[in-house]
Length: 451
Ligand SMILES: Cc1cc2nc3c(=O)[nH]c(=O)nc-3n(C[C@H](O)[C@H](O)[C@H](O)COP(=O)(O)O)c2cc1C
Image 1 (tube, rainbow, N blue to C red):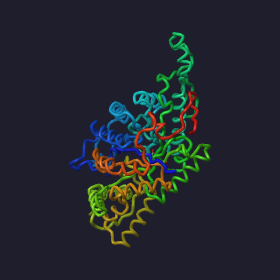
Image 2: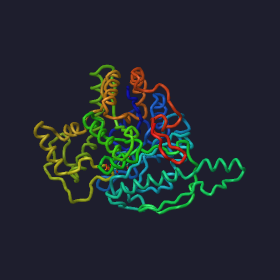
Image 3: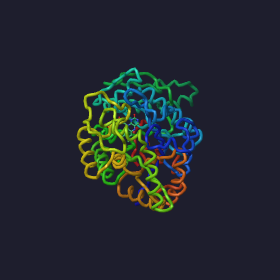
Image 4: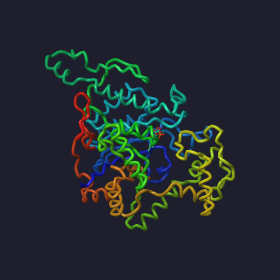
């Protein structure tokens, strides 16, 4: 049977992939930007609109990056506004499990679920650095190893709160004309290692009962957490070989956790560049990459790994002849370090640069790769469909280098081809995000019934 492709549209905010200085780029904070992307995605029958979260502005040597977009609006406020101008698409926001409290999270997400008629989702992140914590009372809070422990208990507690309203009892009360006589409506008590709370939850059971939970984070602990607790995963693995490994690993972990592996959907972040011919698309992709990798971006990419000031090194010159500084505090803060071992990374890059005669700029182009799908609409539709059918993933989270109008041509030119093939819906099947994703529906006690 043809697997149905799950599509999500992504507005990442602060990053070096979006060309915010492009003449056609919108504002990173104006409502019109989010509205355009969400409505375009809904026109393409996407499953959900997705926002990342950055709780701290990034800094270089203690000074805010001038090439990052300064400031981003709050996820929940944006999603609640979008609920009013869309009617089917899911609204998934990233919210941190390290710095937020379960009671607030449960209230906010259940409210969004009510306001949107059952379209809310929560991407659970734990954040990667103590720097972010300094914006909160809890500077430096929690040790890395405890973050998933807290995340696990946060999700469990939030679900207890969502399940705390006994709708049958409330309906019975209404029928007898009494005003919430049921003493158990909203009552909760959670006594755990991370949270010791009890009281009454203020938001009645929402249309989905359980808004969907997404996870992003790739360590073994993150994978186990996702396989046991999440409905979907935002993955960084968009290339077939590594994507298949991740897919098989997560589905196995889900089985080990006693779940149906189909109930955990995997969606890598994915980029595309379209053209009328293959040559035109490739030329466009090259041009986009040049604009993304400005001299300052190249400098920061390498400063993060060398952990020192590299402003004296010419991007068109050789690699720095100094060693990375592994004892100094982080030179670049608030940006995930994806290259773990600094010395090993530098050694690997030096060998590559020597072998191919690369300058810093050429090395930056090499390590940052090209867009995932580059080609004519037909070729992109073929390749994306093959990626899904071969179990690279269950769907993709599409982001464009041009915000907000970049998604338009994907929806106008690639979506109809996927629909013709029968791998993408032409109409939404259900009214809630859970139904559209084909996920188990919770019964009134919160138990999930696999479909
Ligand atoms: C694809 C992906 C997207 C992420 N998006 C965010 C984000 O929007 N905001 C955030 O604070 N952290 C984000 N994170 C960071 C994770 O929440 C997590 O803190 C980090 O990956 C460390 O966990 P790990 O060791 O399990 O990967 C993201 C991670 C991944 C892999």
